[in-house]
Length: 79
Picture 1 (cartoon, rainbow, N blue to C red):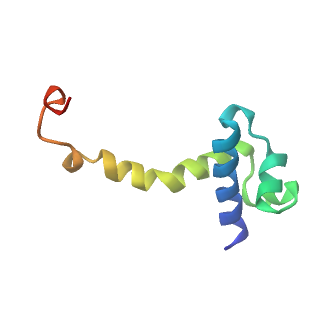
Picture 2: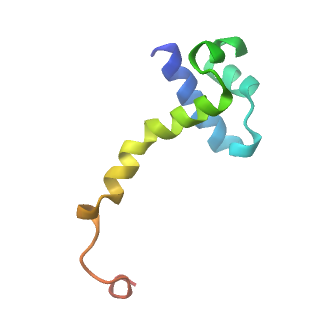
């Protein structure tokens, strides 16, 4: 696995464990097995890293929210 992918995977794990508001670059680096400065070689800011995590998971999200995936029955019928 490439370093950038390890960083993104580690970021996702840390977010799941601690919550987005409590994530630090130090924790992400530790989880990815890299120096904290290495994060900034791949991502200019912490926000860029967090956005990369969202973008990595956006395609599956878009796929399940596509109109063709919607049920044809009413919500009340499903309940």
